[in-house]
Image (cartoon, rainbow, N blue to C red):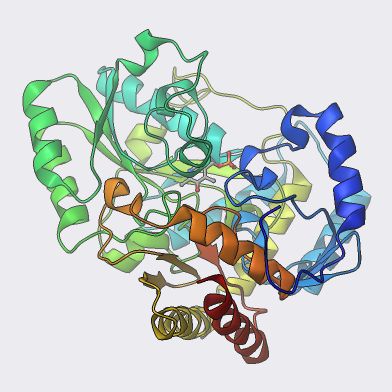
Length: 436
Ligand SMILES: *Cc1c(COP(=O)(O)O)cnc(C)c1O
């Protein structure tokens, strides 16, 4: 453990459970970043969550800014979501046959997200991105794809190149087990760099199926697109007969009801979704232009399937969550909460003489402990990760749960109250003063 001031938090049950977990599961976790490797110390084992709070197995309460990495946008265990789930549960958890709830969620997604005319449900963001990549290749008859350094599109082979947070956090360059022949078709460019994309198109004529990106990057910290970047990609892809794909697994229903594409007014050909769309249950989706989506089996020849896909339980959580979000003023409220939070964080770091740059959009925020601006992953690496580790531990001690990596965005929810933000900012002020 890192030395911290006021180390008063009793996490002995967490430590005991995590010790056992490490002998049962690789690294003691079901997903790498949860292991706290990049911030030091032991992970906290959760017992229950409610609203803006999480309680650990030692009974400590935290104001939660991870929100299960995005899904908990209405607050954890929202009573209306839970009630709807309980009702659905009685009728069965999985049919393996069509169910009307799929139509209901599909209609909501199609109405909300500008690019989506048809949608296919899957079980995770990784699955959605993997499938959309196959669809890009099937539709264009081309094999290469352009992605950006620091963007994460799930853990499918072809995307594990300069893949952002999880990989960056652990310092793994690329993953063993990913065939070189696969990633040979993955071209990468720095984020916010249209010239680099132009060059890749010029160097690979008629070979690039499309460009995929996080329209706001949340897997390399928090990076926003510079004015003209998304528009430029839209033009470049059109000119070159390639598809534009927004990976909105994180930004979808989080930075506006229609995602980044509605917020920035740039419509891609295809979109992937996850996280919020499942309201805390495993759901991913990909969708887009009807002529492209019609290639997906059984309407078309591109194969993709899933035993549990579109199951009634998951659909219910998604439907109820989108209903809660699609109400007057929800995104204004999220925006206000998040802006106040990031403004306060930046101010108290500066007051403590710590270099910082930070911003927010909708219910998503992030900061780097370095002088800004940060426009791409290379610049993001300038953040002081050691200092962030200390800050993270100190904030835990004060009952604030931040993402355990300097390269992850933070998330707020509709359940985060003014008092939560006040308490959080108070904690930041004290912690910034103590870690220097
Ligand atoms: C989380 C995420 C994924 C992967 O989704 P999983 O549900 O974890 O498989 C893909 N793309 C982006 C942008 C993400 O944030």
